[in-house]
Length: 303
Image (cartoon, rainbow, N blue to C red; front, top):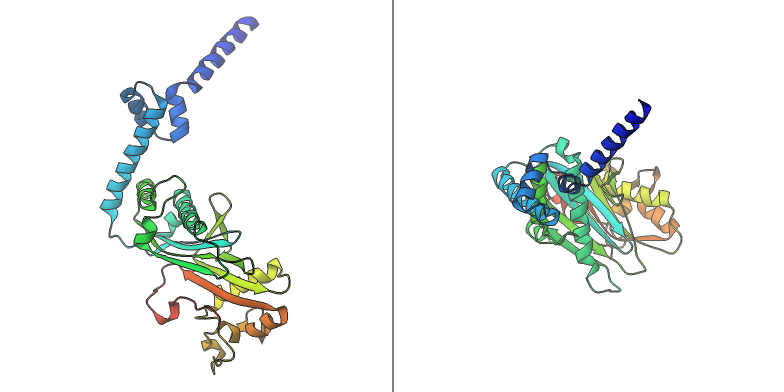
């Protein structure tokens, strides 16, 4: 009796093992598509897993474009601002969707990560320089950037739209490439959420700040400087020789004259002088903001 049970179990294990190694099981595992779609793909391609996988991707692309076309024109007021830094380059990007529910969707977040890194890929190919390189992208130019999958972001976005079932839009991005004398810092807010593979942060507001310092800058101070820009939304760094502080501190738009949010008894400019830090450039994005208004013009560099 005991021996028959062992034999039955062994046969079951063999059947399971065979099933796991079948073309159908392999294709489902590789693509994540349904049993019916994978079966159809294999039937059309004589059980060739590679060809079946390619066919499935092409079908998904076509279906994604069809859904993207159908949903085109629907308002996209929600989304994420992505922030990613790698050594001397950084990207700040805004990707929109219809609802905050989709903004929390893994597929949408993976696309934000993919798009952010496509920006980095482009900027990494720019020549090295002793000056800060700042490259801005609008919707159409973003769509033509190439992802790590060697596809245009427009195609990647169509696939994502087909998956999440909502309209989405690549709105804008800015990328920095800096010399060794400048350090890039950045963060997304609220409470930075890591998107996809632990590199891109995503939130409703994001910033990248370029600093030059004669002394070591602590991680806490880097975080606080980013939060200063995020919370106070300055229009420019400011120059104490050319600019004058506002009469009402609540109306202050120059970063150096703003109250330091972590110690209102001092101004940001005083803090920077004490710590021997210079903010040479920055950019702040808020998801869904009106970029045509005076309050949200691009940040100016400090001269």
